[in-house]
Amino acid sequence: MPRNLSLEFTLPELDRQQDSDRSLMGNVPVRNAAVLPWYKSIWMQQNEDFPEYAERVISQFMVFTVPSYLQHHITGGEPNKPKKLHDIAALDGLRGWACLLVFNFHFFFTYTWHTHIGWGFNKQYFGLHQLPIIHMIFSGHIMVAIFFVISGYVLSYRPLKTIRSGSFDQTFSVLSSATFRRGFRLYIPSIVGLFCVFIAIRLGLYNYSRWVVDKGRTVTGTNEQHPIILKSTYIQLWDWYWTLCRLMNFWDWGLFYNNYNPHLWTIPVEFRSSIVLFLVIIGVSRFTTRIRLGLEFAIIWFCMRWGRWDVVLFLSGLVLAEIDLINGIWNTNTNTSKPASAPDLEKSAGTTPIQHFARRCHREIWIGVFILGLYIGSSPNLGVLHTPGYVWLGKLTPKTYPEPHRFPQTIGAVLIVASINNSKTIQKLFVNPLSQYLGQVSYAFYIVHGPILHGLGYTLMHNIWKVTGRETAFQFCFGGLIGWSICLPIALWLADIFWRAVDVPSVKFARQLESRLLAKFQASS
Image 1 (cartoon, rainbow, N blue to C red):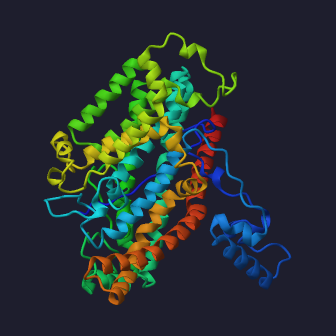
Image 2 (cartoon, rainbow, N blue to C red):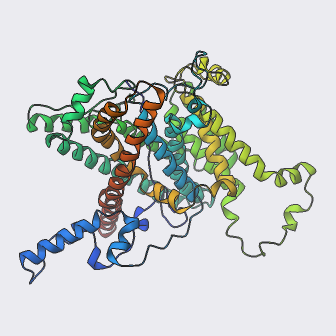
Image 3 (cartoon, rainbow, N blue to C red):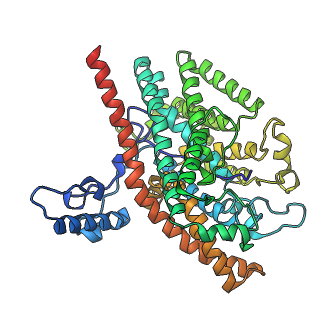
């Protein structure tokens, strides 16, 4: 099986939500009634004839297909004001950029194996793109580690806050809500995305790319699962249905790469790991902080012992959230009792020289940790024991890991996330509007980028390299850059539409369903 990458997910405004999933509804641009999404006003209004109705629906649909950040140019309204950033908005931006690097990986790994190996592998690969840190631009497996650590952090942050305040009733409510809505959050967009691929197959949009896979001789890297065109719509529909059944079988700990969108293999992994995380939080909730941390580390060691790298990543996010709450790093922005320039005499009094030095070097220390995380995270997907600079990491990897590269990349992901949380300097890289936008659409981008690359990408690259050639490194890179430059904006455009049409409504649906069921329960009790 090819080793593909995906991501998750949703980063909440932690202090404004009652649970761990961020309501994406807060990020949707507010518009007047004239430019509401077309699906909200598709029905014919009273005293409206058909030509007026058709014109209105078509115009609203056309506006809806315009990217959200450009719609004010079409409607004549004001551009959307940037939202006030929450504490861990930088992790949202990190997730967005990591998603873009996943796109790079999936674009290039189809045509070359160089994305999997590092600089100096087997004493014969010395490309600039294979150097540590630079290699992360094209080697995407570290990103799944980052995504899972972020998910573990976000999903546990709010429950841990209620535990530390002794509000155990609220802890139960938060975990109950998160558990109920988790499946809807992950599976509704995934199912809709798979259905779109099913429709595209029956419309013939994958006919040419299917030929490229079978006979085009372009796919010389990872030939991952590609949509199969069956004889009839009826047979295809049954195949699609059984794909959904297997995708929703989170009891199977094996990785499932389906033919419609193989990158969705992480969805059952994500759901299963989330449930394990919630169970661990409940199990350790009533212990003291010291005992709770000790148990969390013990469970991580147990999961490492049995090679469950995915659960290790989620629980690592839990530990990071616990440590950050202990250190109170998110409380620094809320203290307005003293001017910003006033020294904290209580903290400075009686400090040892080592503590004083550590505070002065805080910025440099965390930047160093960030760079170290990037270096370790650049551990190659293949041949770590034959790659200079990473042999020692390969020797440290537990023998139980089914994919050895997951262990050093776990260490790298933990260091990256920890350093971003503790460094305002690094956070600046991920809190700008572009980073925040990429974070908003990242789940939608993840779902749509695979079908785009398999359909449009395979078709484009086969024909582009017919013109440019691919015999030399320059020809290969030049043709690849052309195809990448075409596929990326199209994938981002469709991701923006999918985000507003599917992702956001699915979050709203889960919340409304939970509220209605709770209302019925309260009314009957």
